[in-house]
Image 1: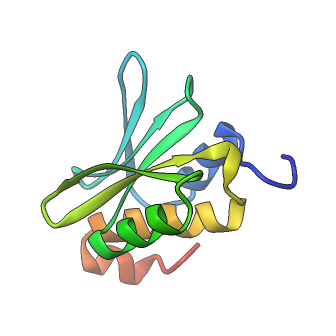
Image 2: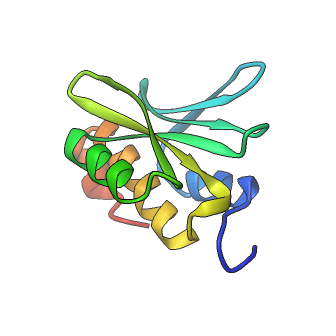
Length: 116
């Protein structure tokens, strides 16, 4: 890894450290869920990930750093963001991945598995 940027395999290792993650591979991306609830996507070709966030976090991330984050979509009271892996630090990405998982996981599972 360079001073800035996260390789895709590092993102996948971060996801693998979370509890009960299910992967669904499609032609151009992999989707990630916890107990049937989606929390993320990974597109290797574009070196981007999509992560579930709160609406306020989506707004804050995109407005503060539009070179790193962009709005993906909003659904069910959540705002999804596209994250450009070459432009984000590993620690920040780890926090965002955990938050996306936490927003989808049942509360007892979150309590059993605090922040990685």
